[in-house]
Image 1 (tube, one colour):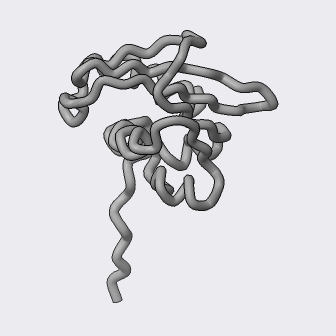
Image 2 (image 1 turned 45 degrees about the horizontal axis):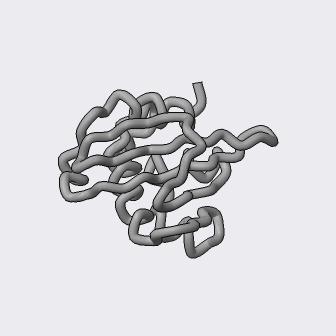
Length: 122
């Protein structure tokens, strides 16, 4: 299972996110992977999360490659760094990028837990 698929499945099961208690918005994710685009719409209603494959309107659209999303959800890069590098494109309300970063940083995906540095003893 790809990190992108796992992220969306985990996001769909999350239910409520206390960090987004004050937010009512919708974010469309357009992820290009293997030559095709997968779209998901995340609706946030005062912290309650609902994920759908809906093509309806959204307050913001975040577009990136599957590889870029992997880097975002595993913490190898931040949404702001990705945006500045051009790896992440945003249409609509740019403030929602900051909110999306909260979702990425809270995603406990398999294999994404940073390992502590190894210390060599002499």
